[in-house]
Structures are given as C-alpha cells and as structure tokens.
Length: 367
Image: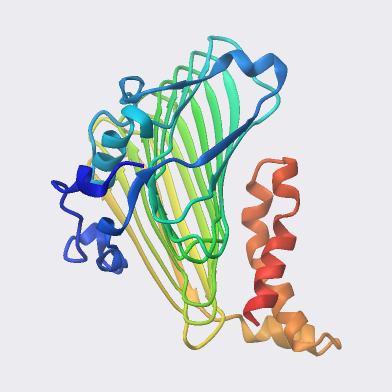
C-alpha cells in the first residue's frame, strides 16, 4: 500500500455544496485510509474473452473527460502505478455479446481506499451486458470509489447492472457516466442493499439524435445505513428519450436521499424525459428525502417528474390482515409488491433471480 499523503492536496466537498446537501460527507476521514486495490474476479464466456482487458488512466476519459469532483481526482491519482485498477470492455462494431460479463470486486483488507474503474466502449451496432458486484464482510472498514464510463456508439446497446452487497462498515462513493450517440441505448441499473454510507452519482448524456437511456435503482437501508443518489439526464440532441425509476425503503434509523435533474438543452427538441422516485419509510426513526428537478431550454418536449415519501398504505395492510395474514407477513408482501415494478425491469439474469429473497431477508432483519 501507499500512504494517504498522495491525497493531501485534494479538498473534500462539504454539505454546504448543494450536490452534497443531506450527505454524510463530513464524517469521512480520508487520512485514515491507505491507497489499495480490491480483489477482482471476472466471469467471461470463452467467445468474449478477447474484448476484456486491463488498462491505465490513459484509456479513460471519453465519457468523463475531466475529473468532476474530489473523488474523481482520487481515482485519477490511483489509476496510475501499483494501485491502478482499470478494466476495459471494448466491443467491436456489429458484435453482440450474448452472455453477461460479471465482475466481482471484493474488499478484503480494512483501512484501504480503492478506486476500481470500468470502461465500457461499445462500437457501432454492438451489444453487451456487464454486471459489477461489490462485496465486503461486515467488519471491513474501507472506502470504495468506483467509476464507470460507458460510451455507446451509433445503434449500440449497453446494459450495466451494479450490485452493492458491501458490509455495514464500508463506504462507497460511486460515479456512473454514460454517453449515447445516434439511436443508441444505455440501460443503467443499480441495486443497493449494503454499505454504511453508499452514494451513487449517475449521469446519462444523450448526444445523438434518437438516443435513449434508462436508469433504474432499487435500494433498501436499515439500522443506521444511508443511501444517497444523484441523477442527471442530459438531452443534447433532438428526439432523445430518458426514463428514470428509483424505488427505495428505509427502516430502523436509516436514511436515503434522492436528488435528480432532467436537463433539456436548446437543440434537443422533440425529446421525452421522465423521472420518478418513490420511497417507503418503515419505521418512525427512518428518514427519506426526494428532490426532483427540471431544467428545460427548448419547447416541443415531454417531461415529467414525480416523487413520494411515506409509510406503507394502511388500506393495503388492512386488506391483507383482514384475510388472515399476520401483520409482519402483510408488511413484507406490501414492500415486495412495492419493489416489484423495479425488479421486473431488471435484466433476466441468474444474479437477479434471488433478489426478492435478499430483499425479504433484509426486511425480516429490519422487523
């Protein structure tokens, strides 16, 4: 490991900045972490092994040309030398990768700050699905700062799924950024169940006519966990389409924050953008904040945003209990039904198949 002095010139953000409002960033002591790496394993079908490689920071920058914040700066610093951890998935023109590429990143050592970086570069009319899992034991005190850059060329199709199963002492501050060219499709899914403080910033930029993006997240916090999401849907080109659906639940004394922005730029006429965030509070000590926003610079567009924060519907609970279902079972059924809309949008993959069971297990622990 190297020493944390590499980060001495970097000023961490504060809650005074709007984009970090409501966060727990003031609790972060970067000095207690030394630079390190995660244990990474790859599951790649034989016919796709040639498209996956390792690289360095020199390979980054198409979807994220500049370091957008302090954590992107930290990632840039660590993407060189012995701490470099850059995985590249580059799909040639016209090639469709049928089997998903699964990347499992395990935090094995406490006291590290790790900055894994994933680059997905899909050439014209290509297709790929990438799953990235983050795992750690409950006693591992560490900071994970992952960055994902996705670039979809004309008519390319990228599906990306991030799964957070980190232990309850690990922090995760993630940044997902995608770039969509003409008639491309990017689908970005996030499942967040673990971590102490887990933040995901997801930005989708549609720069080609007819490009589309979908952002979907399921999150569930209990005990004193916190999930923090920031999304940005930017429409640059005409007739582009974005759809965002985030659903979460908080129990115990946990918290969640969602802040999102739809930005329609002046040349993006004929575009459609939708943004929905729903939250369930399952106990009196739980807290959720939802702040959707619109910024529209042209006419001839269709946009909507919606958000809700509240407890389980009493009528739904009463309906189930009146049919002889025990209260704790009724609550579990209502929560699973609440999440079902998100689960049905997730890709039909084996790693997703047990998601309902994981949510049910977490709900049982929070009851």
